[in-house]
Length: 240
Image 1 (tube, helix red, strand yellow):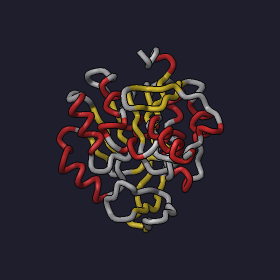
Image 2 (cartoon, rainbow, N blue to C red):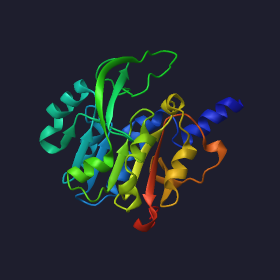
Image 3 (spheres, rainbow, N blue to C red):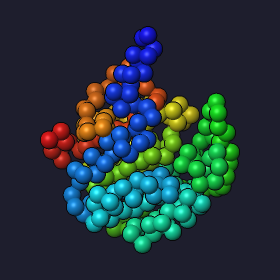
């Protein structure tokens, strides 16, 4: 009984499978709170499902998509390339090359980690180029990001560490990141995100109809898929 109650409680906090369903995830609500012409970085864009939702809600958005899988990035460009900028690279904390692993080419579960899973096998599919977000912004004269959305199967913390300058200077208004089972494979904890961000950002859990502020406790380390939104404190009160 208590195990069932636990599962119900997690679902009620939007932790679990609902976080991957646009109708339930609350991600659309976040987009609706943005300005009419926001600058959005979609890191881990895959074939463009999230970008497509952004363009539906904010047609004037300026979107930069980052997708290291050659197969997925090609499909993204064919689908939405005329409406956004797509880069076939990974973002991380250092410039270089990395092996890329996936159950199949173009899979949305592609990762820089050879994940261990009971029902799927992550195999090396290609070598990918990795860049730091700070360097991409410098090279493209990007001085502000309204929303940095990161869904990179366990590599989220490395992406943020590669955005140190943009974060430190207040150039990123809000950061959406996914946390879940892939973080077991990358050995990262929710605490790591709080250490990196909480001085300048208020971290929230994205729920179906808005945001719920989160204060870190050890019991918040739940490795089931959850979307969080860190809002820069100077940006005002995100609950309004």
